[in-house]
Amino acid sequence: MATSSPQSRPAEPPPPPPAPPKGRGWRKWRARFIVLLLLAGAVLVFIRISSDRAADANRVTLDEVILTAQAVPVEPTQAGRVISVDVAARQQVRAGQRMGTIEVAGFDTDGDPKITKVNLTAPAPGIVIDVPASIGSTVAPNLPLLELYDPARMTFVAEVPAEDLPVVAPTMTAVLEAEGMTRTVHATVERVIPRVERVDPEVEPTQPTSTEDEDKPDTMQVTLVPASAAEARGLVPGMRFTGYINTVSGQPGSPRLVSLPRAGQAPVPVGGE
Image 1 (cartoon, one colour):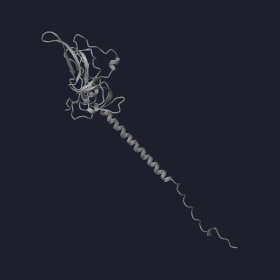
Image 2 (cartoon, rainbow, N blue to C red; image 1 turned 60 degrees about the horizontal axis):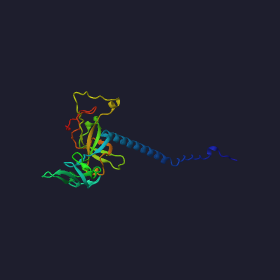
Image 3 (cartoon, rainbow, N blue to C red; image 1 turned 90 degrees about the vertical axis):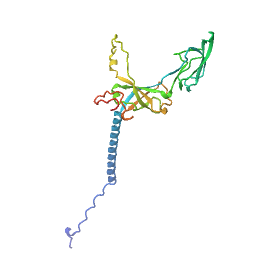
Image 4 (cartoon, one colour; image 1 turned 60 degrees about the vertical axis):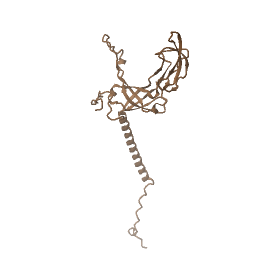
């Protein structure tokens, strides 16, 4: 019986290549997408840090700012006794409004004593600062019935390091905030207050009493005014603020407060020339 040779058998086809694992392509693209997100986040963080550093370089920090107002006395030209008071503390009044009445003792043309009633009126619009003098008390020049302040003429006084004054100019904008306030207040730089002391040539200048005084940073006072009446609304003299001055704001070419240069800078002429 004839047998077939192994060489005469048909060759078996090669096995098919293994199929790629499911989801492998998606995982590859997901990994690339995550890498791109990380790179984009790093770029955004770098831009944010660079922006913050640039903003800080254009700011002068204000650690102590106090809101002040000029007191306007309501007082008579001669002494008298208060017989009526027509206003109360924190009341807003208009110019010419009667604040109270006093009795002034004097003499008539015949030399006989007489009592004259004098109405005391507000010399300007404003707000009554405190409780007026009581009925029966005496008022006189330099001893007023009460004092007013004009909310439209309030001023901020800020302590500014002397080394920062050469980059600060009038018309620059300051942003202020106070503890407990839900909004910021915008003010405008006005001027620097010169520090002047009387010097007695017969008295030796006083020396710092301690190393603490020597190490205290040199500062000067700078006045700022509210940017608008709306910015001052609701504020009361005596409030304390912190904030900063934006040194790239204000009118171009405004004269600097002082002409001394900061360290590493060329002198800045007064007048912005």
